[in-house]
Image 1: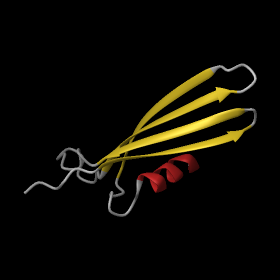
Image 2: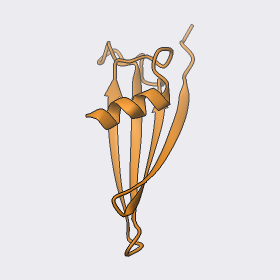
Image 3: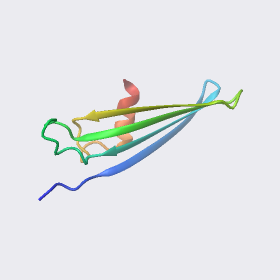
Length: 86
């Protein structure tokens, strides 16, 4: 029996330094059975969007990552917090 796939997301928004920063992380455990990556537990997509208040200019950065932290022990909110620390 295959393990159930978990997909979830979390969004945070902050206003600082003359801009609004939005971070959205989408997380999945769909690939955790990949034999080439035995410790893989979750993959994530982090979208980081900046809106500069003075100009209205919007810039977006997208980062992909992997982790050995399981969905059972690490929520999308917690994972977003950990990624921000790095």
